[in-house]
Length: 465
Image (cartoon, rainbow, N blue to C red; front, top):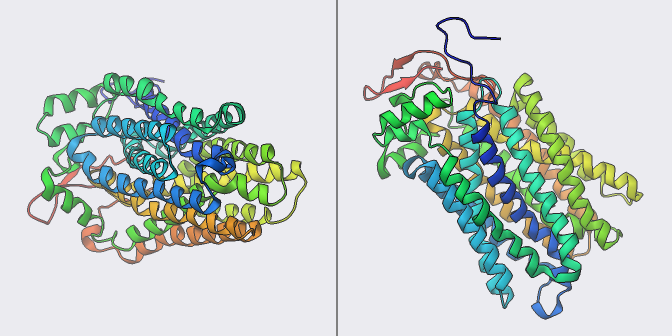
């Protein structure tokens, strides 16, 4: 079907495939690096000469996610200033360096330092990739594009589990961490050559002709001053402050709380599922395989949730998925036959990971294009406090020898996430002001097509959605 005469060509997945493919690749390596730690955890603990215990492992897991917190907050705020491409390149280089430090680490303390360095890169990469996909995705398909990209995280998790099962028993955990250096060799050259810069960022840097060229190549709307982030340090502070403007001041902390609960689940389960299943009586090989099964469920869940969110709204799907996650994790408290346990873990993976991703997909319904990267950076950054708590909490539970309590704790976190994300549209409706009437509350798959109007503050041009 061709566009009507005189109409702009419709942006499709094919027209932006190189951008989404590059984001898919770097997030694949992100997922691989995050899940490598959980995949080799049993071998680390069994390496008596290295001095790892369940408690030490949980603490170092929290160092990783603390690095992610700093990376997400820093990159989410700086990416509009420095640019998307340099921040993606730097993030990949950091977590590759961290993996090399872990592979060479003589002590647990140095190993923890390597995981912290890796966390800085891992935390920064995710909000940037989400912002890129949200900007370049086809109209009314933003949630599906986000889910499609995030399948790579779970494909990376499955690859990490496969490396742990294949290399860990015979070659040791250090060899597995050397695989984490591959992204620096493979991804960085491709990003430098093929990843486009955001037209809005280019316009903010005064590179208007380049911004127009990128927009034309990928069939994006021509960037406007309203969509260009304000430059300089003052602009970065203003961008963060704008997240608490009319219609957003209550939605922002609720998105943060939902992200906290979601990332507590994602990183708590990814780090400790093998040990929790082992404590429930399953064998070592079966316990590690559960990590691959839950990530396989995650891949299916991203595709299902993305399509459902484009039709019914990301907020609604996120809330339902959180509640289903609570049911799945609570069921794992019971001592189940191995086959039944695999099915429940797979189904829980469908809901658990995409519940968190749909929190991200909800952000465009709350924030304007100029706020998107900063908003996503702070949603993922503040949410990383949940990622810090998750591995630590799992370590405390495993140290106490009570796997049932661990699964119950994760179920409660899922209910908390469902409540928080469900309240977002309510506070948006109840706190709207006349100045906020132009802010979109459409589902994240929609795109602004309205004219640009003059705002009331300081004579700035503001987008009407």
